[in-house]
Image: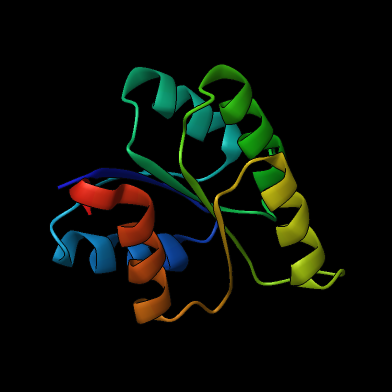
Length: 124
């Protein structure tokens, strides 16, 4: 199966996504912020990155921009639960920066796995 990198500052979200993806047979790496995610991706490139938008240190938009700048073919799913601005605004910006799929938290299992399969193609 595929190697997927989950980027989220919320441990519970990372755990939930990791368990969901490992049940599908994927190998999962995790990072708590965008800086760690980019470092992790450089060392062990993933087939897919799932990133939250609102995080301390380097947020998801900066992460998407940094990954796309260095690795133009990286596949990205962006997640957002909102914050002070409607999540749709953050997600639309993430899409403009290169995220191929955008999902709103809380994300349903079927929706997440569908997006993963779609982006991974044969590896999904």
